[in-house]
Length: 489
Image 1 (cartoon, rainbow, N blue to C red):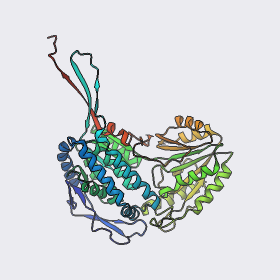
Image 2: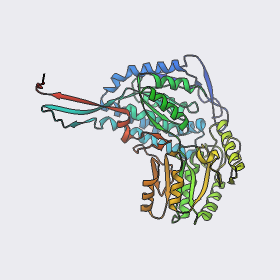
Image 3: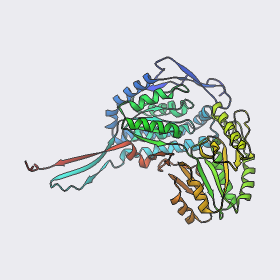
Image 4: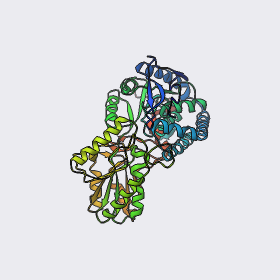
């Protein structure tokens, strides 16, 4: 996969594969080899409008489609993805540097996502309401909103694009998907291909790609267009805030899953071996490039020396290198800019007085597992999300001090608590200001049916098959009378 893997990744609009209207392309590079992975359509606002035209045209018929039709399409797509595991695993490695383990996690999630979403077509669509008007029958009916604009990132490209499109489609909406320029295939075109081959009607899912630095024209066109009634966004808090502000001006609801600066609390009664295992996985899975990764390990002072010695030793031994090698744990970061940001932030923290316990020096396109302690609050690592295999260690006096430290962050996506007393852990979970808390586990967990999402600067709304009806449908109040109603005048 060190050559041009495809002739080109093109837009998928109205059921057809088309070039960008402006005729431009860009080269997507393999993050491990640095060579061209694919040439990709570099779309702009004109392509976004064409995709919106197709989605809007397809909506009336799709909204009225039979439940069995939607179910069969989604189940066929699930079976096809399941059969293509080896191929997709290779694409994930070549396009995003995704290792074998995390590629399997993504594939398992997406196959389950499609199969669970197939049942949404038969989910209850409303309820009967009591009315105080004699002879009136009142209903609250859920109906699809229309066109959904879905904006997905690169880091868990298969999962996050799938999550953005599958539930809206299953509930009768049509979608325009804008994948990241770093994952135009596994985060975009692959989903269009899977669903089209499974029988999805033309125009129900449309994909528009763009060159690096040119997301704004496509995204702004999608958000501003009156035909778009919901926005689904996963990405950075900075970008999410801009999207929310723009959506608010257009009175549109946005489901936002944003960044995280996730804590893992290790209490004094924890099994240190279990805690180290959890922390190593939570900090370094997928090279630390997920929004759920543990960024801060807050360890009770009584066990901190033992925990730190074991954790640092494990981190230093993790295999680094080629993401297609099953032994690799930490592969390449996504691009040169991401690598330079890691170098700069680690150097800044050390210059401000932090102590580097392991790592910190890049090796080719990889950044090794890196552990710092004593990071001052003014360092960017201390307060901002940093995508990569970098984790901060800090000591807490007790559980209450650990809780205070965890809650001091502006973020509130996910957290973990390791303790010998799960009931104590549940009490702390109730008081942690996070949308997700895992007791006796690390923060990296997800299932298609769970209410995934954060609080504070980590977003608003919840993804998850069980919650899609609320996010991607609207309630309509309908009444019917069997007899003439008397009016006072």
